[in-house]
Amino acid sequence: MTPETDIRQALKAVGKIIETAEVAAGRAAGSVTLIAISKNHSSEAARRALEAGQRVFGENRVQEAVEKWPPLKAEFPDAELHLVGSLQRNKVQRALELFDAIHTIDRSKLARAVAGEMDKSGRRLECFLQINTGEEPQKGGVLPMDADAFITECRDDLGLPVVGLMGIPPRDEEASLHFALLREIAKRNGLARLSMGMSADFEEAIHFGATHVRVGTAIFGERPPIE
Ligand SMILES: *Cc1c(COP(=O)(O)O)cnc(C)c1O
Image 1: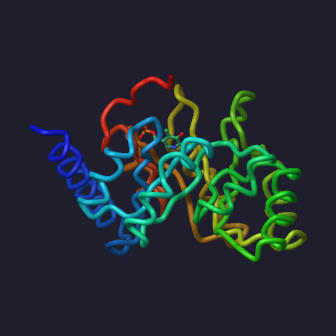
Image 2 (image 1 turned 60 degrees about the vertical axis):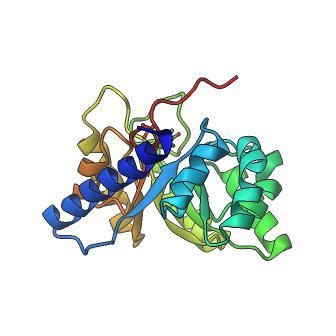
């Protein structure tokens, strides 16, 4: 099989699992957005997915996305790019120029920088706030006990276009507990969208209400190491 058919078939297979999971969870068909995570993969790989009809993509590093995506976006103007990796304040301006959504607003200083840059540029991207449900020191995100205050700050004080929450469960724990916690925090704050679930657990995430699943390996294969 050529890599081209690989990616096309993988997208189809992932799409099927999503459809089945939507039905099983009593969710509307097509209510879950598949974000194809193309980080560390070539622009040719991303292009193959675009040619197969995939339109929503995710990258985790601003610099890599800046190098890879402008020509692809020129060629496929309806492609949508989501930032799913941590964002540094000195990259906010570039991120706002290139991306269509940010999943990793995870601290006040960053939230303020993004709000300021949005006011300046007039460009408003959908924002997901990252919650560190596993309270892991190496991970971004606010702690669950600080989530309500952070949501209020971002949405009401700063006026960010907050659409939902994002989380990455700890590797060695039952993901469902973390999905359920994220859903609970979103629900009590009136947020409709949940960005959760990766290659290993997106089916389960949909069961727990994911509206956006972030799938890399199951579409593009194992990632080549970063040089
Ligand atoms: C890499 C990455 C993914 C995709 O992970 P896979 O296991 O390859 O599907 C999802 N979300 C984030 C934040 C990532 O960095």
